[in-house]
Length: 206
Image (cartoon, rainbow, N blue to C red; front, side, top):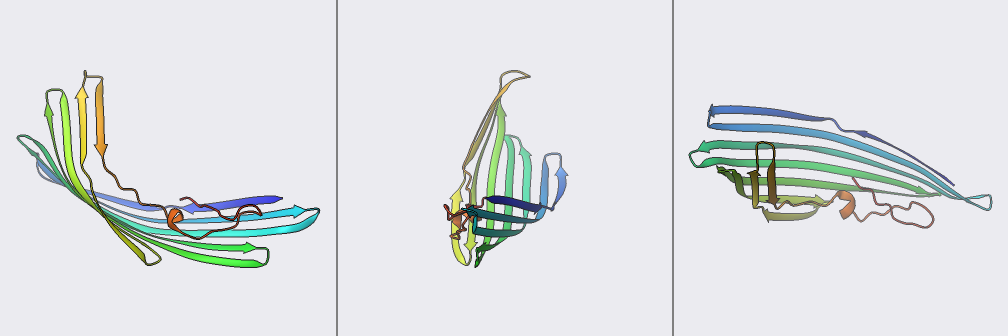
């Protein structure tokens, strides 16, 4: 039996930040980001029985991911505390190309994943004696398309954060929030690949 594999990954990214101060109590912060990820995975597998060459498997996976987004945060300090209002938008496009050769039989598949995530929120924070608290409300608008199979979700996202100072050196923190998690491309793709004579599916996690 022979089983060898190799992979190559490239992940360049760009982040730009900008902040403008209206006054000591009021500011706005902007950030922009972009990414261009690529991954290549190659595998060669053989099985021999009774000195005969029975299984010959060559698999190749290429993934390309492009993405970008913007974040805006407005902060204002008032007499009763601090108000934050924010917006975050992130978009990614992922394409996976699968090529598989099982002995003389060849197969291929292409899967496209398009994700858009828009998050709007508002928060209020203040300090009372040794306790600092921050409460917030927000909403997520999620768009997902897999090979033109489209889904849309809207998620309400409340949040709370508490910090209690026991002394100048110790404090207790508590944070609670609702956060949506989108499935990976491998989790929602129906494409299977043989990996040996006993198994028939290879799960490729990103």
